Image: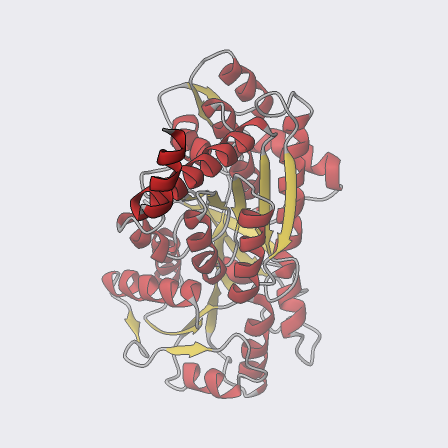
Length: 426
């Protein structure tokens, strides 16, 4: 009988398919079980080099600090958390290769990142395909909200920074408060720049303002070596304000060129968090009197007003000896939430993190801001509502949060100072 069964199996294509299917299912189950049985592995995908490197350096430190904090109070699901870092290079192609390594070679359960929206756009497809949870601390383009609504990410996407839908409204309100009626826009030609530009134009026009180059927007190639033409095109109509949606290295070329061509005199420059770095005014340079070319420029950036901010600030100061920089609290919160969700699910997998992320981030549950206390409550079977350093980090069904924004100004010496805060509702 056994011999006859073996002979029939050799002749049966359906039997062969069944055998292959069974083998594949067994391998998948074995793989998932192995992932559950080993300690939680998470990756980071942040810009250590490239256009946003000066912002990205501290974000990596925030992730390491969060992992160290959780490991010092028992780790996740009984084991220490392992962190594997990758450099996005602020480049979508390089980031795709890095994300592929994290998901398919290192087999991480979640990734904190990316930062640039264009980078996250390429990386999130790989994360979703491999059932790896991705939480970005700084990709703010509205395209992710739309993608989530369409089901493109299958729930493997969230962020701890508000989408530019909100920041654009804050920037438009700031422009009107400054008495600006006719403005021009110039934007880096990627998901971040173009998405923000569209949201700003809509918000500014609703407030009664005019965008003089609305029909012919100026968008620049981030890899261009000179941006003289783009600078002239943006300021050709002599606006009273320039809304500059830039990245640090490439954006400094554009504004330096605009100044050298005599195009910025009498023009109020408004900036965003894409250039919120002490390095940016230095790269743009000084005028003949030694003052920063960008003196008086204003901008908006992601702020922080969470219940855990004071404690986090003390911890950060102790760790680095410096003040935290833009998007550092959001990065801390993204990392903490990922680990809390894994603990709540009892699984060190992307599916586990995905299934419990909103549960640990949102009400109902006991409000708690200390990560170790939150972890202990989860271990004891209690529901929590994590209150972060950046804000309450209530994640909606599309992976979005709403947060506060800082208003900042560039001083004569090129330093940055925060002068106000604004909520999107304002």
